[in-house]
Amino acid sequence: MLLELRAENYAVIDHAVATFGAGLNLLTGETGAGKSILVDALALLMGGRAASDVVRHGAEKAVVSCVFEATPGAEAILEANGIDVEGTEILLRREVNISGKGRVFLNNQPATVGVLRQLAPELALVHAQSETTNSFDQTQQRGLLDRYAGIQTALLPGRELSGELRTRLMTRKGLDPARAGENIRTAYTMWREAMEELNRLSGEEQERLRNADLWSFQRTEIAEAEILSAEEDEQLESEKRVLANAEKLYTASMSAHEVLYENEGSAESTLAAAQKHLEELARFDSSFTEAATQIANARATVADISATSRHYAENINASPERLSAIEDRLAALDRLKRKYGRTLAEVIAYGEDVTTKLQEIENRDVLIAEAKQTLAEMEHIYTCVASDLTETRTTAARSLEKLAEQQINDLAMKVQFRVEVAPQKEQSFWTAVGWDHVECLIATNAGEPLKPLEEIASGGEMSRVMLALKVSVEEGGADRTRRRIPLPRTLVFDEIDIGIGGRAAEAVGQKLKALASHQQVLCVTHLPQIAAFANQHFLVEKSERDGRTRTQIRQMKEEERTSEIARMISGATVTETSLRHAEQMLKASK
Image (cartoon, rainbow, N blue to C red; front, side, top):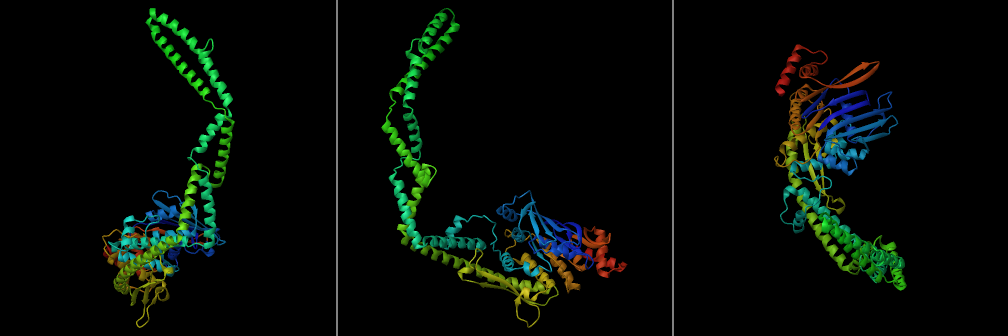
């Protein structure tokens, strides 16, 4: 949910901070105090369009920021865009310069408006007077219907497809309607993979033949080299070093043998003499026994090393012919490594790869036929799953539109409402969430045709329609005990009470309260009947200081709420009657 909202030098606000809580957060205040300005500031943080006229007169830039609780979906979006996730909160900040240029920061790291727009559906849906028609686009309308129907299509980024689900789709058996979102997502992925494979195999003929000639030459060149192993060059390098230094190695090994064993005064003869003396001492003093044994062991070690050195010298083959052959072989292997890989292992792997590609080309006609058959199967699977999804959505739409129409008409409106599900079966419309175009239609006057919401509803009407839809979905959707489908955690309604009063206003307040039991709600209102239902009540007020108008926001205490609601009832002059009425409203709302 939204934890905090800040605005600095934004419109008439010099500096304002609001800390919000769970449930229903209501903003009230005199007309023109700047309540809607705060909603517009939040809309800007959700990726709304920025203009230089939002900068407070005399300031260089406007800064708006907010803190949301982190969600798994929001964290995945941040990570996908290379932004570090810090703790359990997400900080959004946007700056707008007087020149019209601006900057975006997420968790104090530079970002783009595009990332804000990706985050918006996960964090908040703002129904500001200036933003309403843009907020509730076709994607939002489909998402609302899917939530009502219990269809989970909004999977988190990076989720892997289930092998079991893939198998069930291939056989079209055992599909769970409750997992319709996963079904369509998997079917779409399988269809795209099949199409990409066919396109790869059906590449340009000339390019294919040119590659075939090249790959054939490369395969032959690597095969004719008859590489013995991935370590052949290392072994040859070692042998080359020995052959190139044969004379030095022979001299060194024989010299070691002579010094250790053959020469007069060799190490072995010296140790033999020492052993004899120590054994003589040991006859009279046993403390020398161990020393004599150690000398005997040393003589044996010297004899072994001497024999090894002599054997090594005797086996050195100073063959110029062998050295030349090794150098030629290493040169040939180096040429292969320059062309096909840094190591012989990479050269061998490259040869295997081009062999596979040549086999594909040689069997191209067969592979293309198989790919076409696979694509046809995937197209059939997708159309079946998409049709099932259309049927599920259509059934849910008939139920939702009846419930929503009743809820809307409870809010001082007399409308006809319909949710239209139109399958667009051309492949250009196929997506991972199906092929359906979902649109809400409304007629606000009897005898008028149904038209899209944005063509009919005013800002206040749109907010009431959204409120009714949200309440309908939360209270009447499929299987309320099922795991909840992620939706924006925070809903914002601006001027939802335009053109209503009396019992209708109380109905709006009750619906807001009901909706706020499921998710955080922020609402700007002028009606005391609605304000009485707040969990947190904020007062937005203007003041003048140093010749400048300033807007501030503060959360009211319980006793202050009575006075504010009384003001909303009676106007500038608060009477005893209005105070008593305000107390009764607050008591009744609880």
